[in-house]
Each structure stands twice: as C-alpha cells, then as structure tokens.
Image (cartoon, rainbow, N blue to C red; front, side, top):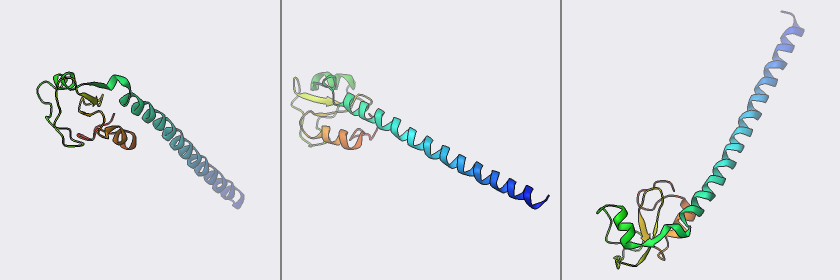
Length: 117
C-alpha cells in the first residue's frame, strides 16, 4: 500500500468515528428529551384530581393491606371520608395535605416503595 492509500484509509476511519460519535450524542439527547416529557406527564397524572379519594376507598383497593398511619407524617388516618392521595402505579396512599405532592414532584417515585409513577 502506498502512502496516499494509507492516508485515505486513515481519513475515512476518522470520519467514521466522528460520525458515530455525533450519532450517539444526538440519540442520547433525543432520548433524554423524550423521558423528560413522560416524567412531566406522569407527575401531572399522579397529582391530578383523580388520585384524590377517601381513605375508605383507598384502603379497600389494597385489600386489607392498608397502613393505619401515613408514611409521610406518621399520623393515623381518621378513616371514612378523610382525603388521601393515591400513587397510581402501586396504590399506596398518603394524607392529601401532608407533603406527598412535593415528594412526587421532586422524585417521581412512591415514597413508600420507591416505584415509579
């Protein structure tokens, strides 16, 4: 192989590596953008009016495995018509006004099981 052929081969190899690197960066940026959009939708869904219900209904959804105290504030549930926020993915629930909304916005996970929204 002469010097011109070796140089052409090296230039081609460098161009391919650069193109591959650009493709990886673009794919990573595109994927992060899509995930961020889904996270916002998940948080808004988890904080929507549909996730506020009574303690009685939320406890019935867990079929006898419901906690007697809120894992956020450690206060007992008053029962009956007390309002709670239910995490849609896992069904865990917390007092509606004790700070679970801030947790869900900041972390996008259930405070009890750490499952996604």
